[in-house]
Image (cartoon, rainbow, N blue to C red; front, side):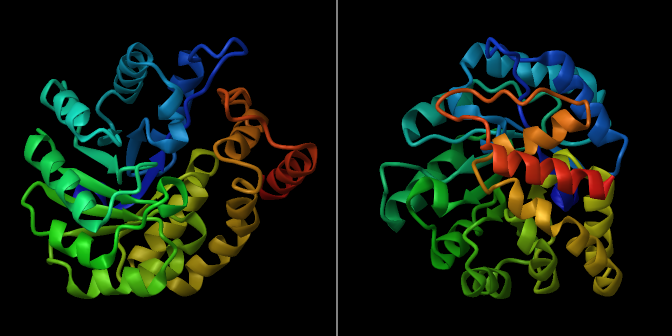
Length: 291
């Protein structure tokens, strides 16, 4: 799965003041990514506020991204649920045209045990017409997918990768050490990506890349080539922003920077809310230094 190695960006969904989707800004964001070194686009992940986007809006977002992309970059679609049977039905009716893979978050809120997580993903992989990227983000789902579960799932022929956002170094190393050769391990934490690539991860699905695709993808390229010394300076240039964008909620933070860059407005859909004034000012100040 060469298409999902390197720098993927978890696209934000721009909104207007009335919370309708701002398709013009979304197209502008896609162009910005395509022209500045990003390797692939992820549509309707958590950063795209997928839990508060209607089915109709989701379809319109997918069509806007496809149209703006014009086949330039591979597209990965976020498709996750804590209702396994509903997700299977969605997958069976999925229009796969122009899509490379799906990114499917581990079941949230229900807090299934490891056998429940395993069976959920096996059912998803059996039903999906596209390769499946697992997504482990216990900070949002309330349940960690262990290395043992990930490695069992990695043997399924339709499961191609895992986006690991547990922040657990030991867990990540165990997966990397014992995974099948063609199974891709992707960082889900911008700030940890450089050290994670040094131990064997093969890229990232990033939030910060929305705003700084050239600088961030350059850092990832250098890491992938083993040039960690020169990558380190880019990493530290971006580190404050990588932390600040999550300081008072995501994607509220990254949308402040995108607004400063003239790409989209700062609106997020309830129950999310814009960042507080202190964080906002820190983000704007750091952006001025970077630009």
